[in-house]
Image 1 (tube, rainbow, N blue to C red):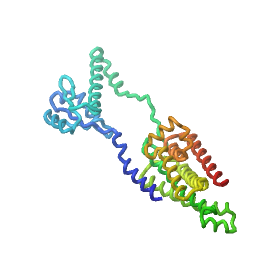
Image 2: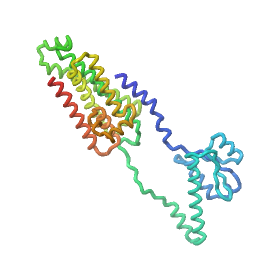
Image 3: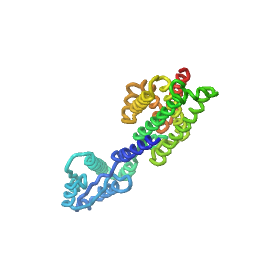
Image 4: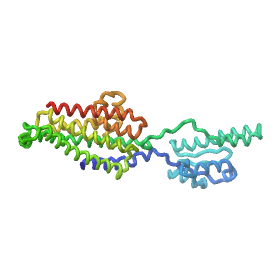
Length: 346
């Protein structure tokens, strides 16, 4: 129970600021406070407008030319603007922030030149130009996700829960060790009791499932409430996925223990190796692996039970349609049926 909790904590420490660099930060820019700047009311109003508010483009500083040079050399600003006969910019290097300043100036100059040319030919169009400049239209629609903002780090936590579900295989393995008379002395005594073998197995397995699912609920609580990882609004389906994951993990352990006629150490080694390899393919170590396999070898994605669980959580967070989630759950049930059938017949 503790290992997934610790791993989730380390994930949180590693990923908490991972997306910060992708968020737009206003560009630090200065403008030389000269006579031309004070007289150019249009440009001054536009620049002040884009330098105010929460969604501002620039952090603007009005200063002298000498101080602007010093700020630029100290990398306190990305560039500074000089208003003269032409508006120009001064930078010390090329980069994205410098390109933003240049694009803003170019855009302003193009619009200003177009306005000036049109009004020189027909001053009566002044009102029409002002109205048209205010009419900014967007031709795209933003589609929201059931879970909110896109966050590619959540896949690591989803695959971690899938791995924790399959750690229930240790308890499933123990159930077989305690019911197969040729494996342990405990199992030999259980088989001598006047209780049907299947009844003894199912009752004990149900207790193990209760413990396993409780541990997964603790992990879910820690990840969602303490670490604030978003799973979307479909809480009931998240619990259903966690429960089926716990069942499949327990069934996988019984499957390995019944199938492998070796020592307990060998069985544990196989269980851990298969679980970690499937976790790797599900994207727990590197999320691009999951998408690469889904794109180039989709069959592997469908025969990896941990990927099915990871993908189920992913669907609940990102997709409006439930069709892909239902397919993942159907495939998970198929694996549970396979594991249980093989265990039963052995």
